[in-house]
Length: 311
Image (cartoon, rainbow, N blue to C red; front, side):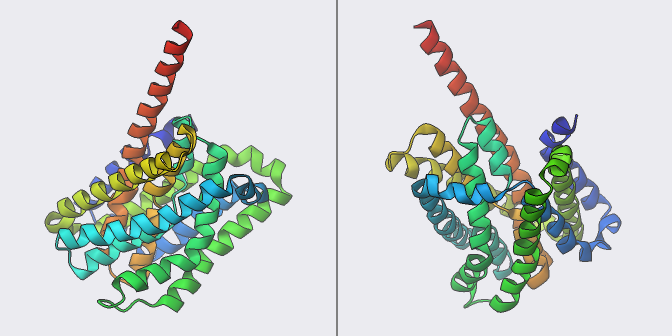
C-alpha cells in the first residue's frame, strides 16, 4: 500500500501544485517550514544509508568518480547554457543553476532499481555526491552566476552543513546503532520524504502563483531540456568509456535526477521565490521522466532475456 502511494508521487505533486495555484492562501503561511521539511527529507535519507554505502565507493571508484564529475560538470553548465539561450532573468537563471549544482536526488536509487541498474552503486554515488555538494554547490553557484547576483557562499555553506550534513550524519548513526528498529520503519521513510517534498512544492507554487502564468511554461521547457540532456549525456558518456549497461543506466539517473528539493530550499532561503520555480518544476518532472525511462529500460531488458531464452 505504502509503495503504491509513493509510486504515485508525480500525481500527488501535480494535485497539490494545482491546489496551491488555485488557493495559494492555504500554503503561503508555511513559507518558513521549507527548510525544516527539507531537513526531515535529509534525515530520512541518512537513516536509509549505512557506513557500508560510503565504503562501497572503493569497489566502484572508477564509476563513482566518473559519475560525480559528470554530475557537477554537465548539469551546472547545461543549466547556465539553457538559461542563456532562453533569455532568462537573473532570478530564473539562479534557480536553474542551483538545480544543476546540487547533488543527485534519492529518487535516482529507486529508478536504478526499476531499470535493472546497479542499486548499490546508485546509493553510494548519491551518498558521496550529497557530501561533496555541501562544498561544491555554493562554489559552483558563485562561479557561474556570482558576477550577476550576490551569492552568500559562506552562509550557504553553513546552511548546507545544517540542512544536509548534520541530518544525513545523524541518520547514518541512527541506522548504525539502531538498525533493527530502523528496519521496522524503513518502508515509511520514502512516504515521509514524498510528503515533505509535495508540501514544499505546494508552498513554492503558492508563493509564485502570480508569476507562473508568465514564466511557468518557459521554465518547464528549460527543466525538460536540462533533465533530458543530463540523462542522455550521463548514459552515453559512460557507454563511450566502456562501462556495462547496468552501470550506464545507473549513472544516467545519478546525473539527470537532481536533489531539486534542496535547490528549492536554497533558492527560497538565499534568493527569491522566483528562483525556486525551476526546482519546484524539476521535482515533479524528473520523477515522471525517470519513471518512463526506467520502465522502458526494464521492459527492454526483459524482452532481450525472453529472446535469448527463445533462441
